[in-house]
Length: 434
Image (cartoon, rainbow, N blue to C red; front, top):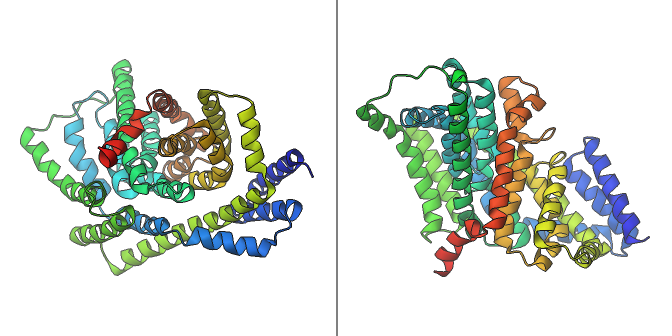
């Protein structure tokens, strides 16, 4: 069988499996089985065992369940309430006022969570009721939360960066550091849009609240001290060279347990729920990685990735043309898959193209995260949209419409990253080579 018909067959089978509701991991492994039976003489059992074992013993993946557990612990604390109360007095003077709490709150929580959905759910749990009670525009309240929740993927520690780093054998510490400036840039873009919208639509803003005195603002800032210490402990240990990304994850779990105990929310029940939640999520990701590892090995036996890379190379596409094609490709995938599945599924196919095109793999990792962030707020399979649908009861396509301006801002961030690659590469090159 020629490679083109086989490629089309595998794509049709994959989309049919995903559309039928089959578990993603089983769909990936099933397509790998078909590929290896049709095109290779290798025994599928041996290939499956070898590929799954290789994918499972990566030391870098040890950080994954730790950071997930840290996020689960913090989700059950009063951290989101403290963030809102600590930030609100300082942001109430900006155009857009408390809408900025969604952006800044998500940015701060992203630095201790690593998950887009967890960031969106935790900040939204306290912010949406407070904004509704004060009369803020529902469209902007939901839209800012949907867009800003994606910062959980970009601002370190990021779960998806760990997966990308393990899949491409890149330094996770470098990826974490490379995400800092793009994360800050994205938060500033979101805040700039909120401020401009508020100035252009004063009638849709609630009446201003009494301005807090400086002393009250300083007093409220004390509620931010625990989360600042947590961020300093986790991220500072990596940037300071005191711990690897994996070791910092353990530091984060210890500090989050201490923070939960100090807040009085660490009970036997909350500890058990956090541990079980982290176990379920970690097992789901590990299951997907195992299926994707087998598919990757099977694709290698078929020769499809190499042939595809050679074909695209023969087209003589410029780098910007290849990036446009990849962006559209990821957008289409985002209609069916979550971010982690997108990364592990495409690694074996995309990486040969990326390396031949001469892209820096650290830079490309940040590009992939930004594009996956766009998919997080793209119907019908946008995880942030699912979270907000459960919290607000609104139709998922309506929430996607509310998030459209932030989707476009993410697109602008991708363009800026392509035009100015130093946005992602300057900080890691300075810290590791300066």
